[in-house]
Length: 390
Ligand code: GLY
Image (cartoon, rainbow, N blue to C red; front, side, top):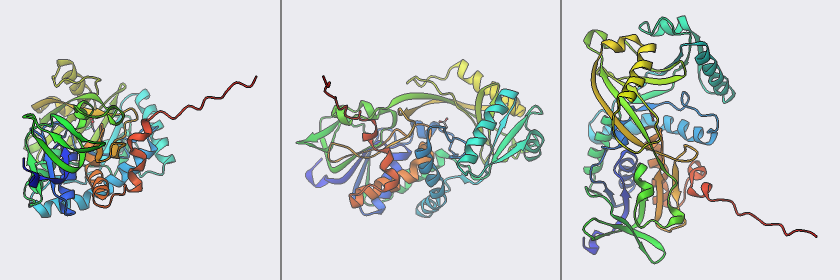
């Protein structure tokens, strides 16, 4: 590449996070290259597309909740902007979510979650089993209780990624390079670009690392700025609701059945996404045990599952972090910005991540909302040794 190819920003990784950042950065007037050998085919392709900050709130994740709630609020305007830019429908569905419990232990777990959600002032309603079946008549008769979360929606992640790719590639200031980054280029004491597999260099003022579970393995990353990311495998299924059953499930369903959790995400076109395993593995194999676990739990809460065509089984690898929250913002290596580690929230967090990171790229200042998610939260605090008083 010639020196005239110098860009403002290189984004390593063309998943939903990298594509969203690339597109938003171009809209802010920056010259951007997104680098990925197969954009949009990783975890973003495998995902279910749940936008569920309330249903998925974790007990030790209050800071993350602020981000996920802001992310959900940003979704309608983001998809409207994307639809306007591309003429494509990203499949955003404001259907709400119903979480149901089957046995007494599951009900106890659901009530504990409900208590926590109430403490946080989140919009959620506790329902008896019969109320759940009134809302969704094809639920299993044994459903013992539930939580209705009217604001937890969904998006078709594959349509979203296709629209982002179209928006990015149609933008004059953007370039998509379908190659992997063979390494980070460090010049003096700053990140200066990437090295491509043929040894050539691609230079930019800022490099955004958005490579999901592969982020930690990027060659050339200085050790102090290597993100603490581990692979967390998820297996997921896609079933098809035939014409007569197209409306058999009108909202996202989360089930807790004898301690096993499962989610069923119905698309408007009859696709039913059933997920997902959570395995501390890095491979992409679909296993009989994984499929069995998902189908068994799904069937226990929604028996119609047994009648449906199994269209696809697939596995992806999520980028897990020690506290389940993403890594956002600048690092100790000038010129290197992180936008990775989104774990189970990549689709939900893509628009807000793009806003926050693009603000940083355009203004040099990281917005307050992103500050709790910087890499330095994992840097061990300096231990002050006290001398013994003798
Ligand atoms: N966000 C859904 C999953 O990771 O399974």
